[in-house]
View (tube, rainbow, N blue to C red):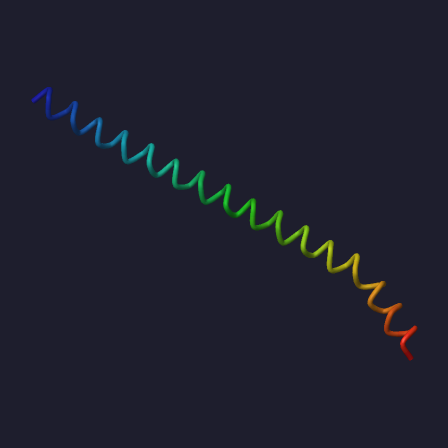
Length: 59
């Protein structure tokens, strides 16, 4: 009986740890994606006036 409880506890802990790790991984991935999109957005905004200038000079 004690063995069964021990194995059940171990299984529960393993499931819990793996789910926590999966959640952490998802959080890290979403954070990286957010940072990447922010930097890409900043780059696009920074390029915008230069593109406008080029268009007006070309006319």
